[in-house]
Amino acid sequence: MVSTLQKHKLEPDFLIIEITESVLIEQRQQTEKDIEALQSMGIQIAIDDFGSGYSSLTYLNKMNVDILKIDQEFLKTVPDKDTSNKILEAIVNLAKELKMKIVAEGIENWEQLIFLRRLNCISGQGYLYSKPLPVEKVEPILARGWLRPLKANNARVQVKNDRRKYFRVEFHQDLMANMTILEINGRKVTVGNTKSLIKNMGPGGLCFVASINLPLKKDLILQFNSELLGSPVRVYGTPVWKEELEHDLVKYGLKFTFDENVRMELTGLLNKVQIRMRKDYGFNEGRFTSKSMKAFFHQQFTDQSADEN
Image (tube, rainbow, N blue to C red; front, side, top):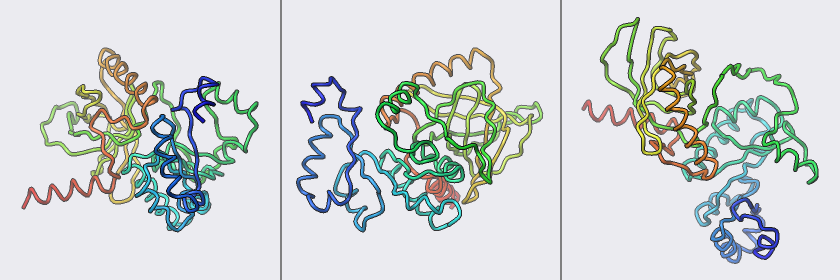
């Protein structure tokens, strides 16, 4: 393999090797040694069909793999079967906690895709996008850099219309931020702050999750304080949409209301973050958390209760 990479002048970090549980069972000790050797070269290792075998969690505990590919059986009954939904959510959260990349296999319809997006599972494969293709048909797709679903969005729950004029950076982990109310009805107010999780951010706005239910009012200005690349981030704007989630959490879309000078400065910072994230999936130079939303806000509630007592 080393000679092949050298012969074709390929960078090892562009190569991903998938292994199945049958290989791990039959040749466990040798496989562990091979995985360590390959990773030392920069090659990534993925476990294929994760969850289909009886000892999947054992492998995670013993082997330092980079990517989990969720077996398509878990996705077949999503989002109609609640058990499947919970299992899939648990696997995605587990991968986040272990700082692993995750790929959902078997995406066949928009309902499944929308559910995965809500879990912030950003990688997947399936017939909704394409059937298996020969090399000559894959190369143009790689050169183009994107692949859209083959079917129109006929989901029972439609995706929100995206009218953004600016790009968005989808964080691999949630960015922690202190949120406070800055203005109400044009009057500045001084109140305490609460914790929030930012899912994505762009020059025009951001998406965040909080444990409080806020009204959608144009005269309500919220401020967020966080940190990226060692620089403080302070942004503010007005909520324009919201979606109630499980565990008494609410997701919001925020439209920034600051001037162009501030927007240009933020754009420069986000461009740097985007470049770093493309080079390093595990990028965490900021106030990021690997906890699931449920675990994060439960901890905040526990800490607040302890302070009050």
